[in-house]
Length: 373
Image: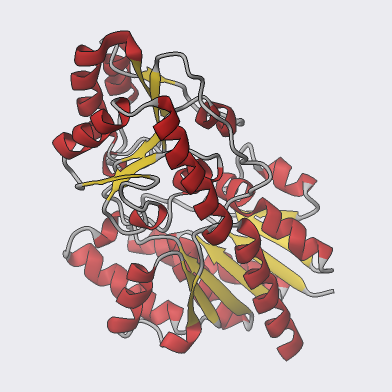
């Protein structure tokens, strides 16, 4: 039985973003091993029928020694396990696991889900990461990209041959789990931001716009935050700051949820004012699938989910004023108009973002590699 490995920088990511990919690969007769740091989702991965090997990854570290040690940890695992194919997700895994798997003789398929904060500035870190991508991605059999901007960047900068690349519709969305739910027509317009609570996700801009709109519209508007505080990241929004916003009555903080569809369902509009180098944000895919209007930035990965003025609005990145204007436009629409926008979102999800498109591409690529052995 061929052994297929999936790696990422958290077990949370694998379970929440690749659960159905694991199920599909198992259904096709493959033995699945997940390699990621151990967290509360590791046992859930095992319950899917996969084996689990923990690996220590410091997501925020740029210490060269620690990065070399991570390559060695991956190599030791692969040299013993001898996997047929390794599927990498998240930045460090795409680089270091690829190098280790190549040295161990395994074939690699990578997924570039956005380029993150290191590509927001043209500095020394950008230079290092760019060259690490060039060194590693040429050793992969296939690299899937979640948006055309990132794919073009890699090709134009000679980081990878075009023949090894393909664009996928983000990580896809489960259209059966995330189905259309209409927000209540009770006179309150509810906005929801679902994301890791980072500055680059536009959380501060959301709070600034919410403060102005809350003062103007009072109890007829609500602004909700859903997501975990990523304390590893230097740009994380602190719990103290969130508490200030909550105590001022600007936003409600919903924490984290295993049932995100419940919170999306009761919302009138999903907002993500990100200026992060996104792939295609999962929260926006889920919003589309549930028939919600979207307000997001005219930014890499985000703009793919919105036809401006049809199923939502695009605002200017890093602009609280632009965001405020788009949110006020949403407030001043009728409930029926917002529902009509949401209907277009659902159609867009069905036509472009179905998770089955992504899963089928992975199964096809794995079969090609296994047959080639």
